[in-house]
Structure formats: C-alpha cells, structure tokens
Length: 489
Image 1 (cartoon, rainbow, N blue to C red):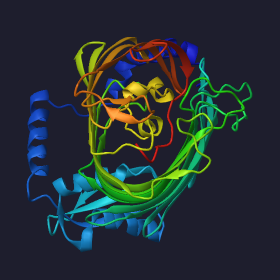
Image 2: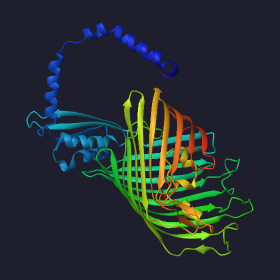
Image 3: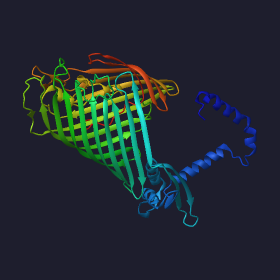
Image 4: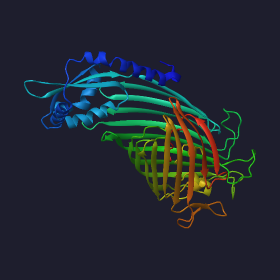
C-alpha cells in the first residue's frame, strides 16, 4: 500500500490481470442490452427525473442519532413540504459540502400507491476532533510552524470550535473562532472570532525565539469580529460582519538607526462593518491550476490614531502627539483569479484586483503607508513590505502561463501590473502626500517550478519586484505560505 515508488508498475499489473480475466467476467453477465436501446432508456429516465411530477414527500435518515437526524432533515425537508428533484439537488449538495459529515449517501424509493418518492439518506459523521499541523521551510527567514485544533458537533444546530497558532521569525500569532450553523430553508451561520498577529519584516536576530529585538518594522494586529453569513447557490457565500481592532506599528523613519534608538509608535484603534461576497472553486490553496476565485467587499471603517514619536523622528518631542478625531473611510475591493485550459498540459490564468477608497493620511508618511491596502498577488510577495505596492486606490492585473510536464509538477510564468491612481509619496518633512495621477506604475514577475506533494508544495523559482531595492529574489520553500487574515486588509 505504501510502496509509492512502484505505483505505476502495480497499476499496470492490475490492468493486465483484469484483461486476462475478461472472459471469466463476461461469463458472469446474464443479460446484455443494445447500446442504442440503453441510450433511449437513459434519455427517458432523465426526462422523467427532470419533470415536475418527480415529487418527494418523505425523508428517512439512518446512521445518526436523533438530534443529528433532525439537523439533516431540516436541511432537506422544510416544514414537511413536498419538494422536487431540482430543489433536492441544491439542498443535497449544500449539505454534502459540510466537512463534519464523513459520508452522505442518498437512495430513492417510490410509493406505488401515491406515485411519490421517499429520499433515504445514510450518513456518517467525521470524528469530532481534528488536528492540523504543518510548517513552512524556506531559504529566506520566513520559516514557521503551525498547529490547528478543531472540534465539530452536530445536534439540532451545528457547532464548530477552532484555534490555531503560528510561530516564526516573520509571523507569530493565533486565531480562535466559534461558529453556529442553523439549518432550514435559508440556512445561515453566526461566527465569532479573535486574532492576534505579530509581523517582524526586518528581524535580524539569529535566535528563532527572539521576538523582542528592535527591528525596522514591527506590526501587531489585534481584532475581534462577529460575522453572519448564508450560502448563495452551492459554491458562494454572502456575509455581513463587524469588529473592533487595534493596529500597532513600531518603526523608524530613518535608515541610520542604532540599537540604542527608540522607535516611533503608531496605534490605530478602530471599528468596522463590512459586507462580503465570496466564490472559490480553486483546486489548491497555493499554486492553483483550475477553478475560479472571486471576492467582492464593501467596508466602512472609523477609528482614532495615536502617534508616539521616537528619538529619530522628524520633530521629535517628549510628549506624544495624538489625533483625537476620528479617521473614517469607505473602501471597495474586488479580486478575481481564474484558470482556463487551452490545450493538453497547458493552462492560462487571469488575475485582477481593484481597490477604491477615500482613506486619509496618518501622522507621517510611514504610518500612512503602513495602513494602506497592499497588492500581494504571489505567495512570496506577502512576506515583503514594499512601499511602492501600497496605495489607497489602484487597479491591477496579471496573466499566468502554466504547463504540467507530468502529474503534480507545474512550471509557472506569471506577470502582474499595478497602476495606482495616486501613489503615496514622502515630502521633505516626513509627511505623506499624493503624486500626480497615474504617474507611477509597478510590475511583479515570477518564474516557478512547483511539485505538489501530499504534504504541500515544494517550489523553486525567482521573483522580480521592479520597485524593490533588490529587485530579484531567489526562493526555495516547502509547505504553504498562508497566514491568518489581517484586520486592515
């Protein structure tokens, strides 16, 4: 079973053995039918199943306890009202997508007296506890370890408790959430989650556990969120959420700092409300080659900035400078990522992103750029902080050429173009301002070889960032470069 090196030989041996036994297999077949006749019967059956006369008036569930049975029944059979095959299809696939079920197997029987049908569901639950452990191993100081724990329960409603933790030089933190799923004609969920993340983009410490060493840029993100969502069709979700957060930044406004210097500190305490629509059919978490991802979000945000200058800041003072007024803004963001198969072993991917916001500037250039939306279209770009790829308003697009010489191995060539409407620039006083409209544009390119193993992708390649001080970046990593969501994103 685990002799993977000889898997092709084993498959060939099985195929050859089947061919040798075809005469014996055919001897067991008692009845044969003409292909044309079978196609006719299949067509008649399909027409019958799609007709309005195909009505269900009863649902039977086996394999579950009483409360779990009610949960399944309420997702399929609303208030004991009859339903059609078309209605069943949507309800069944929505229920089958719930990963708390190990299997949901439907069969149908007909009542000879009424002519109506009964739906019989045989279901099995997954184990209630789930442990997810992983790591990213990289040639750059972004390696990290990950552990996730999940508890699932289904009674009259569904319940999920989840917590994870990351630890690494770049990113450390944790995330916890509770979710309740309510079945019915319009199923919905209510979710509460809290997240803490710490990002150290310029950690120069050799020690893995040294998280307090001063660095050029450290960010701390704390937020709590409440979310209510419901399915739209079988593959997409619409949700409304709101939360409160504190976004802390520790930085120097000059490059000639020493370990004796103190950083500038900016804290942004805010609340937000948003509505989000998401669709995702991508075949992989990273380096996808099939499917579509579409996400559209509208967000309103309002908060207060507190700025504490360090000893290297321009116009440094012993007293903190605070903005006592609110900083409100409205933001719209749309992201698309889709793939098309052109011919054998070759695919084309298209990427697009649009951000529009009336966001205002913070106390200085550095704090303003830290809070601006970032364009990070590739996995590695999430691990850099590059000022040029941040803007309040921008449009971006990309194209990907992907070839698969053999199974699970892809060669990817990707190029992305970003056009800020007004780039954020720094004036002589260290404050932020806007450039002339459409004055600057930016490019990101990457060439990657990826082998997708059962444990995660192993990739090697080179990235190009045209506005970075070292534009070329050689990377080699094993595992998923995935982080908890930031509150400001």
